[in-house]
Image 1 (cartoon, rainbow, N blue to C red):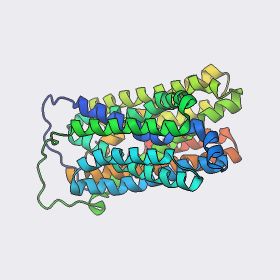
Image 2 (cartoon, helix red, strand yellow):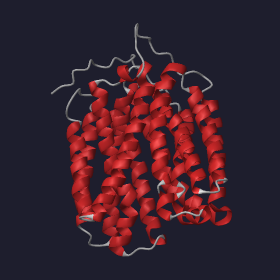
Image 3 (cartoon, rainbow, N blue to C red):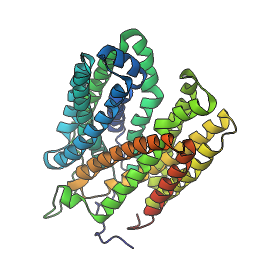
Image 4 (cartoon, rainbow, N blue to C red):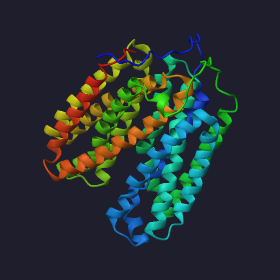
Length: 399
């Protein structure tokens, strides 16, 4: 049944508008720094548990604390940026995140670490959704798939570059020093965003009587797109969170042994974002791009987890799975950004919040599967979620 919400009106496209590459590079760095603030803890969980005098499972839960704070802050910051402007969030958020990372590096017990992890997650959520809105505001509709694909590549670079570099640096300075290094990187991102937003975004025609806030943003179309985003993040998270465990369990690999497969996994994600951005801008239907990519990912999950003839084949299947799944993300983001400028920050902030729900669903559903049917259950769960997300894209307004 078609959506009842009115079609989105956008400004007439500017012919041959140049891509704001400097801003996109700064935004990519900002996403890399924000993602590194939480993900780079992974190699140091045992060291952190020992230093803080607590258990490993409790320290591991810092990731969940960070994710929850991130999602809540993004919800509020997106709406705030529509009301007060994006620049305070783009610059202030990374600066506050750097201070939180420094505070985290001096934590003496688990309570202090949890407090600073919460603050850091909130600060990261305070500018990641706003970065997406700013990149969208500085590009026309048929550039946004590519622009947002490059911005999102910053998150994938954390897995490819950030975590291995953190492990290497941590050999010399420990987990506390790594937090301080990430704080320095975050300040560089803040300076980059400050310099690349000195000139205001192009003015868009103001709609008389336009409303801001959550009520104006939550149309039927946006709600459907956010539900598709939850499906996409859950489908991706099921493999991103548990792929290393799957390889270790199936092929008996050590931690060092999974490094190359995980690097190839991250490369697949980056390439998927870039290719998906091109498809989202070049093909007439973004929803078709999303639907095909998600259904393909759902189908790829079946041989990935059910058929394990050898390590090389499994790694190739993992690369294919994450590549086709990541190709759906820019199309979805570009569709979400195609809303009136007055609510764009709110909508893209809601997208980050819904993405955190997807990650939480992936972690909890994956843990439930491991306790029951095992990785064979992952195959059917990922397939069902991927196909459901693709089918959902076939309903509503075509774009």
